[in-house]
Image (tube, rainbow, N blue to C red; front, side, top):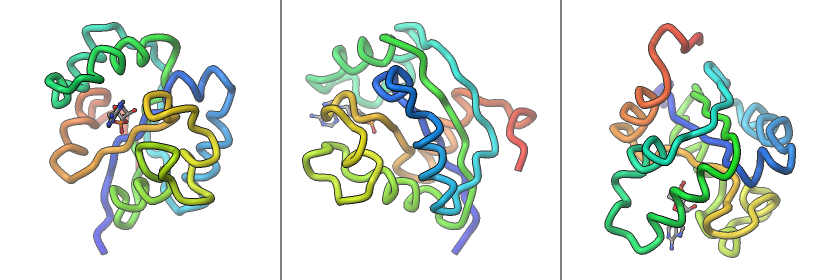
Length: 140
Ligand code: CMP
């Protein structure tokens, strides 16, 4: 398996409930290394640009409005098979369908306020990482 990097976002519902440390512990327990991390408050323009791929979806406007309700923690995770591993640790998008022991099962409030985001494929990870971080800010 290859060493990969993936983008993770701890969403406003989770930062509001002070869950950053607990979520980071889950990631590290899964042998994902946090090789870059910052806490930012997105503007509406930034949220819309980040989720551009979903712009035709009915939930797009609500999703972008939700993402600016509070700070988010954006991070680059590195490890073997990091993209798939992070998605495993996160659980299904809808917490109602998430497996026991996953971040979304344990912490998410709804399909929208689902505590974390993770890149879904190699090309997406490259795009999403460069959306928030320069190479200089990623220290493996
Ligand atoms: P995320 O992994 O950040 O990618 C897009 C987000 O849209 C997703 O998590 C959900 O929080 C949100 N979303 C809201 N409604 C839906 C829906 N019906 N299907 C998929 N994603 C949704």
